[in-house]
Amino acid sequence: MRKPRPAISTDSHVINLCCKIVTDAQPLIINSSPLPDAPEKECFQIVAGHIEKNGGEAVYGWAIWEVPGVYIEAEFHSVWRSPEGELRCLTPFPLPFETILFLPDLNRLYLGRQIDNVREPLAKDRDVYRFLYLARRVFEITNAGDLADQHGKIRLPPKAAKEYWKIQSELSKVMPRLDRRYP
Image (cartoon, rainbow, N blue to C red):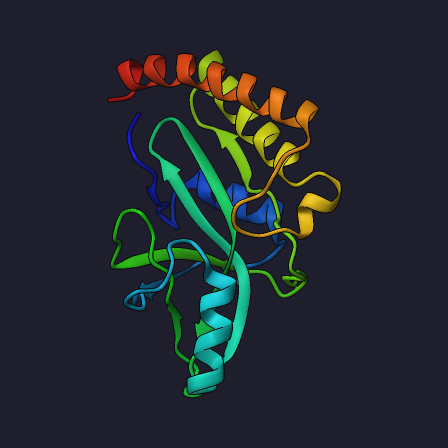
């Protein structure tokens, strides 16, 4: 399946998703300036450390990603506002991007617990629906109870581990079908 990329702010499905998450908010295109040697996708830790050294503040919101024609996804995210007011994404991602689409959310704070992504299909395809459902279940399993307060490598209870591996097995069947359909 195609790799996710920053969504395009003017697309109607992007605007609709943003309005569902934050009423009357406008997504912003902001520069991506990943810090060297920073861990991938650890935005909250990265921004907090950068503020300690350089001042500024954290801005919470959603990075909006899209696999064109397949699905759209909002990921809870933090960016840095410099003392001069410039917003910058400091977080490395698996694929480098010059900019990201960021939807500020003034009503939500990061309190040390993961927040699940908001996902919507763009294709009427049962494998896409299944993939998005399985992604939600992985989040629910890995963040149930006390697991929600753990970071890094976690240890699942036996029953949860069994379900987790069952989901991984199902994903290993769904993904090749999506790869063929959406190269």
